[in-house]
Length: 181
Length: 280
Image (cartoon, rainbow over all chains, first blue to last red; front, side, top):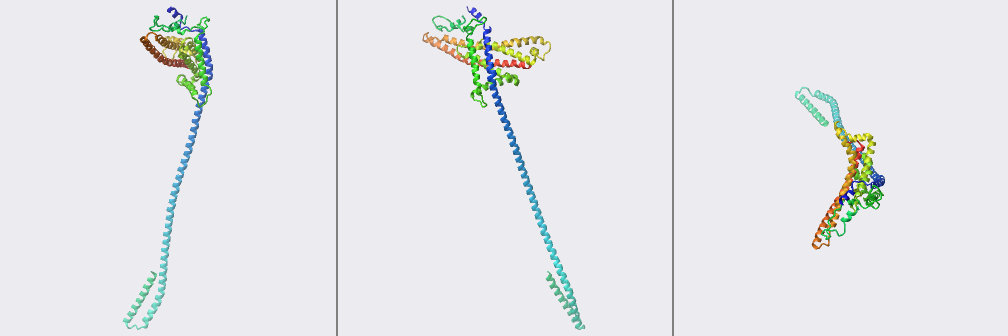
């Protein structure tokens, strides 16, 4: 009985009706799932992929832009720093130049004053000298008169006169010198 | 006639410690041959339970995908994410690693057969029903469709003889070896490959269902509450052990169903890749 049953149930026999219905079922599944549903899902997946990729692209562009602007700012800042340093340097130089110039001027002024003073002194001296020259003439004449007026016999008196004259002369000259100083 | 065995095994009153002396009748191959409702077709078992199971699988597949693909948006909800995850799973685990980007045009087909096979297997999880693929006709149908596809795609990409030549004359071998290799390759690629492709899926579903049936029938057979206090307790313990076994294998069976659907799709992708380009 069991052997008969086993002979009847051949599990490896392919049933053509089931095979046919299976084929129809697969065709239906293929048409609705593989041709309709899955491509729809894949399309959305692709769209999302594109959207995300586009977003990343945009973000990258914005980042690059920001970087460029930052670079510009940095350059400008550096430039202004450099300019400031240059100005400072220039100002220092100018200050030094002004100081030097002022000093030069002051020295020149001082020299000029000294020179003027010297000239004045020289002039005074010349004046005094010329004055003295005149006076010496008068004094000499006076002295000669005196010497001639008194008798020349008394040699002692002669010496006294000469001495006195020289003393006078000396005194007057010393007084003149003091005036110049 | 074919339903006799099932009726016998589940017959009322035939239990462990029963007084009518009948033994345990394990479920047999007969459970895969349900009584046809219309048997008048020559050369066929006729219209039977498998047609209903197939209808359930097709309906579930269409329902699932119409649910996955309706009202799609760029910012996915939970429902859409699951559908996308399934597509991406097939793409990143099967299509892309094996075929690369050029295999993306087969992605809808691979996704469709994966979900279809999975749901064909899952009909076996409904107690009392069987996986559609536990009848060889369905895996054979799937395998044949993929076989024909590989032939068409291969001949389109490598030329009629070119495809066959690339398959049976693997390059880079010393000439005399071809005497040995060519018949083996021919047999392997054009005959054994489609057969094993179908048999693998069929056999695992067949064996898994049989195993679950053994636990279910055995558990029912061992449950006898009319055999006196001591024997009843023992029978309940036995039956409980069978129930635990049933549940463990039920979970295991879910895993096998998923893995088999995955492997079938993976192999289909592998065969298609050999058609797309001369490998080796």
